[in-house]
Amino acid sequence: DTAVSQTPKYLVTQMGNDKSIKCEQNLGHDTMYWYKQDSKKFLKIMFSYNNKELIINETVPNRFSPKSPDKAHLNLHINSLELGDSAVYFCASSQEPPWGGGSTDTQYFGPGTRLTVL
Amino acid sequence: DQQVKQNSPSLSVQEGRISILNCDYTNSMFDYFLWYKKYPAEGPTFLISISSIKDKNEDGRFTVFLNKSAKHLSLHIVPSQPGDSAVYFCAAGTSYGKLTFGQGTILTVHP
Image 1: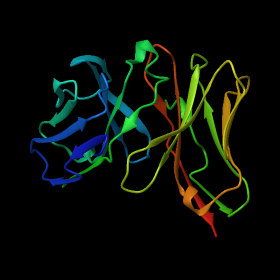
Image 2 (image 1 turned 135 degrees about the vertical axis):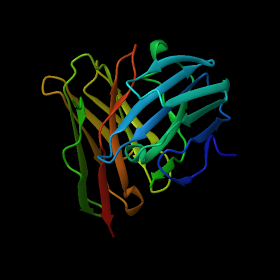
Image 3 (image 1 turned 90 degrees about the vertical axis):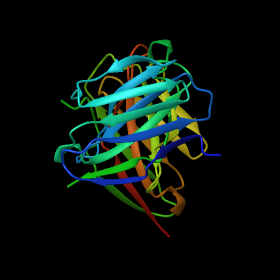
Image 4 (image 1 turned 120 degrees about the vertical axis):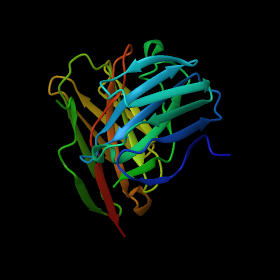
């Protein structure tokens, strides 16, 4: 009964391909996030959705497109993968959105998806 | 421009001793700070937090100290246990914005 799950755990693909990473949370939270842990190990937010609406959209190439079919799921689709996209991607969720004190609200993270682009 | 930095990539301590992990930030608008702990192949898990109106928060063996004038926070673990060996991330945020994470410090506690 994992709280925040991601699939796949590992993803190895060729440059130029399109891939998706799925995230599901069973905590009943309203807000979900995608983070990227880059080569320097910083965890950087990419997107956040609250009740299926995009609320945070950082400076991320538009090859990255999040999709939230319902508030329990937030998937990340990446088009035309590049070498620099290689990283670990973490999904997270919280009960409150950032403006509702969500940045102070505990975020629950998934186990991460290690993406390697060859 | 990294607004939250953990300048020590790693820390090694003996079991039973104190572990002190440090974090510096630059944005004076941050009003809430958190520490997350991460084991290999798992996502970060929340450990402890502190609001900017406080300078100390304690939870069992874990204490977070905040020095707003120095824009510095630290996490103290006393006594350290081998099971504390993990990567520790500090994070900072505002009540109206997103969390900004540091790059983590690897703590190794030797038996």
